[in-house]
Amino acid sequence: MQQRLDYKLASPAAFKAMLDTEQQVHHGGLEEPLLELIKTRASQINGCAWCLDMHTKDARARGETEQRLYLLSAWREAPFYTERERAALAWTEAVTEIAAQGVPDEIYTEARRHFDEKALVDLTLAVIAINGWNRMNVAFRTEVGGYVSPHATKR
Image 1 (cartoon, rainbow, N blue to C red):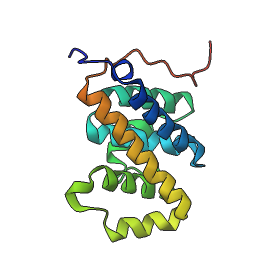
Image 2: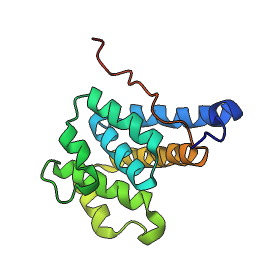
Image 3: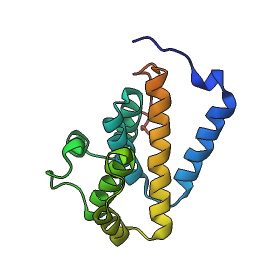
């Protein structure tokens, strides 16, 4: 598929707004490995190849295992995720697919067991941000494959 347009160049102010939101996500206090998991899971749901390429590379560069990345779309059946990660992944799926059923009380209750109020708001903002990036990249068919993680070690 051919890229439709470069949204960064077409509207630098919109791109800056997205970057500002992303900066807040990374300053919210949630652990980076968890953020990479939820970004990858939302990107799987939304079919965003560009974000999947980016976040799986970043996750691996930060030490995430191949096995956990491969099984992320089936996290409920795989024993490799903590209770906190499972709560975050369920929250991510519910917020990403909010039109289908809202956010069920049982998902909220489980998320609150693992995240205080601030952390749950920060988690929600992270889900909102990745869904925004997914929509920009899918809508404009951002070219996939050239991303190099800044977290990768130099060899």
